[in-house]
Amino acid sequence: MPIPTTSRHMPVLRRCVSPDERTVLVARCQRPEQPMHGEYLLMLTKRRLVVTQETLLWRRLRLHLNSELRHLAHATWTTDPRTATVELAVTAIDDVRERFTIKAGDAEHANHVEALLSYAFLARPLDARSGAAA
Image 1 (cartoon, helix red, strand yellow):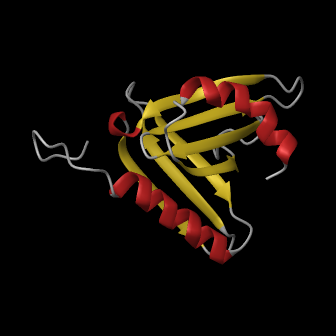
Image 2 (image 1 turned 180 degrees about the vertical axis):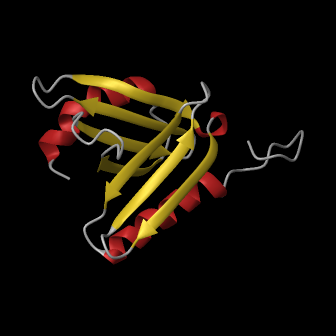
């Protein structure tokens, strides 16, 4: 990912994530249902999913999604090795289904993105009090 892209999004991302959070994945993505609405940057940590949007015409940044993983429901992802893409879908706390397509470049990178999503969404620590995923 180009450094200028990351640098433009960094101020918005910093406001959403605490300095001690470990970043799992940073990737450019698109929304399949709105391909002409600009570019999105997805940042996934062990606790949070943050997605920022940059508009096409004015290159303005806005926060699209900022949620703790425990507040996201029905997280699914599918990998298409032919197109080297990974589609991530989550239901936000307001019951809106969000879909993002990550272009990985090749099948090996797509598999790596899939593994990182599994790591973040499936390998959550257990809550000591209830035994449920935190």
